[in-house]
Amino acid sequence: MSSTLSNYDAFVIGSGPNGLAAAIALAQQGLKVKIFEAKDTVGGGTRTQELMESGFKHDICSAVHPTALSSPFFKSLPLKDYGLEWIHPDFPVAHPLDNGEAVIAEKSFENTLERLGADSKNYRKLFKDFIDSWEYLSKDLFGTLRIPNHPLAMMRFGWYGMFSSNLLSNSFFKLEQTKAYFAGLAAHSILPLENAFTASFGLVLGTTVHSVGWPIAKNGSHSITKALAGFFQFLGGEIELNTHIQSLDEFPSDKPILFDLTPQQVITIADNKIPDSLKDKLLRFNYGPGAFKVDFALSEPVPWLNEDCKKAGTLHLGGSMKEISHSEKEVWKGIHSEKPYVLVSQPSLFDESRAPEGKHVLWSYCHVPNGSTENMEERIINQIERYAPGFRDIIISTSTMNAMDFEKYNPNYIGGDINGGAQNLKQLFGRPLLKWDPYKLPVDHLYICSSSTPPGGGVHGMSGFNAARSVLKNEFGIKLTL
Image (cartoon, rainbow, N blue to C red; front, side, top):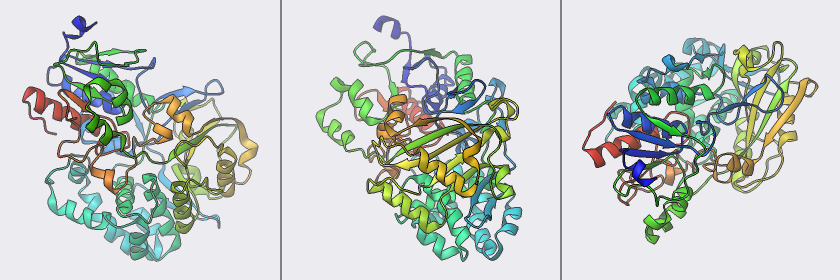
C-alpha cells in the first residue's frame, strides 16, 4: 500500500466539511490529494438519511447553516454547480414565549427592529456595525490567530464579545423577551451563559441572521458535503470510502497528513509518532457537554401557538434568559435539566423533498452532560408541547440519539460533544494547543484540520482551509490567502 501512496502529495483522514475543505484547498494548488473515510459516504456531521419512515429525510447532525453561508472559503467555491442549493425560511429564527407571543428575527434588520419595541434602539446600536461590516469582519473571525486585517471592527467586536452573554444582555436590553432571544443565540456555545466571551457567540449568530440568513440545504445537509466532494473530485482528488485508518505505518513518512479528527483519535492513530510530552498535552484537551437528539416524523406541521413560529426555520425553546441560563449551567454540573434549552428545525415547511406530501420532519436536540446515556425524549417533547399544545397528537414516529450514540455514530463527537472540544476561553483560540499555528502538530508532517482547531464548531470548512494553508506554507512554500 505504501508504494501506491507515494504517488500522492498529501492525505486527509476524515471527510467532514473541514476534511473536504482542506483537501480542496490543497488540490486547487495542483497537489495530488487522497481522502480516507471510515464510513460508506462522505459527510461527517452533514449527512441526511431516512431514519424511520420511507420518504422522511432527517439531518443526522447539523441542520441549519448560517456559518456555511458566512464561510469565506465556501463562498469562493462553485458549489452550486455541484448541486448545492440554499433555501431561506420566511423567518430565520423564532423564540416562542409562554404567553403565546414570540420574538421573531427576520432577515430584514429594519423589520426586526420594528418588532423589538423598546429595545429596537439598543439592538440597532449593538448589531448595525457588525452587520454592515460582516463581509470583511467574518474573514477575521473565521481566520487564524493573527493581527486582524480590519482591526477597528475586530476591536469593537472583541470589546462586546468578551463579556458574558448575561452581562451584555442585561446591559443593552430592557425587555425580558429580547434578553431571552439573545440567550437562545448565545446558548449555541454550549457554555454557561455567565462565562466570559459567551456574548461573542450571540453576536456572531445574531449578526448572521441579518447579514446572510439561516438557510437550510435543499434535500438536506448532505447536499453540502456531496457538493464539496464533487468539486474535489473534479480537481482530480480521490476519496476512498469504508477505510478505517488505524495507524500511519503504511503512509509515506515524508508526506503531510491532515486529521479531520479530534486529538484523542489522532493519538490513537499516530501513537508511535507522537512523543509522550505531546500526548500529555493533547490528552488535556477538554471536551464539552454532549447532545441528545430527537427526530420526528409528523402527520402535519407543528401547531405552534404563535402563528409566526409556523414560518420560522429555527426555533429556540427554553423560556426566559434566566431559565436558559439555569439549564445550560446545570449541564456543566452533570445535571440533566427538567426543562432543557431545545433547538428545533422544521425544514420540510420550506423543502418539500424532505417528507411525503402533507407530512413533515422535525429536528430537535438539547444539551446533556458529556457521556450521558439518559433519555431526554419526554423532556424535549414537553418543551415543544409547551409552545405547541397538541404536538403529541401529530407524532407518527421518533428516533433518538443520546450523547454516546453520537460518539458511536461519529467518533469525533467524544462523549457527544458535537463541537470537537469545549469552546471555553482557554480553548477558544488555543485549540488543541496554544500556538501561533495550532494546525501543525510539533511532529514532522502531521496536521489537524478538524473543529478541534480554530475557529471551532460549525459547518464552515474554515478549520480545514486554515490547516491547508499551514500545510502549503510549511511543506511546499506556498502562501495561500482568501
